[in-house]
Image (cartoon, rainbow over all chains, first blue to last red; front, side):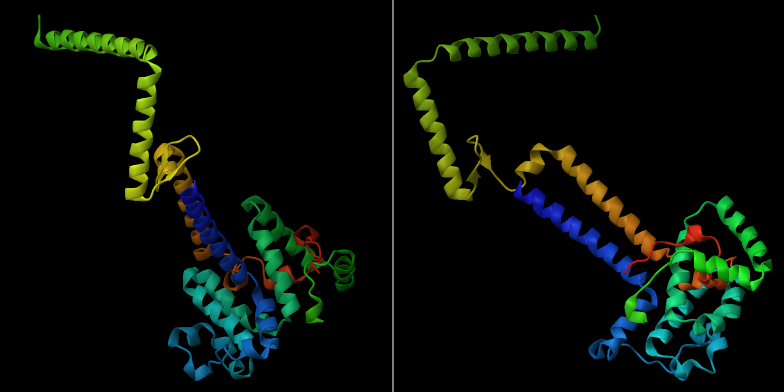
Length: 165
Length: 132
């Protein structure tokens, strides 16, 4: 009986560790920012300059070439994560990534975290529902700005961390 | 008669004999004297004690020897099932880690632009409650 519980607890620990790693990946900017607020943690974050990046990374992150050295360590880390996933995508998606990198890097951590939460939810929807939302976005963009502002005020917060205020 | 049939008859005969022997032994066992039973019990206890001393095994509550893997021996199917479930679930979790299609790169490459995901006024059903 003891041996059974020993093996079971070892397998359970392995599972928990795997899930914790997955949650760490999903922390987004927030974890990295919180870590950078702590002096000890920021010392470990690498500050790779543009010239120190690999050719593949420079190719992916070309839109950020002029501002790369001014980005904070945690911002660079997130951009390098994008460069890592870039080869997994098809050409159409890769072009979109290149086009949207600048505006993405300029968003606040709060906006980026909101976007991640909502994208995760969107990704879990059925293909039909996703298509429906794409069509609704086209309609939503046609609304006047004041209408869109009104909708934003009426909706609930997506993600809020008082430390980011 | 074929050879197969002969072998089958032999087997049946032997089986019948074995069953007869078992019945005889059972019947005799019921009529063992207290002295014999006590001697058998002492012999068994002595054998178990010697085994414990030599191999360091402990005793279960029912008097049987406990050894490493005893539970596994007696519940092989359950143990195998548990191991299989653990392996499969670990594999699934690791696969999910590797196929992280909700990362920033996939967000930027999505059909909907990041602005759609930033704008909480668009499709409020995508919003979660505040986590403070």
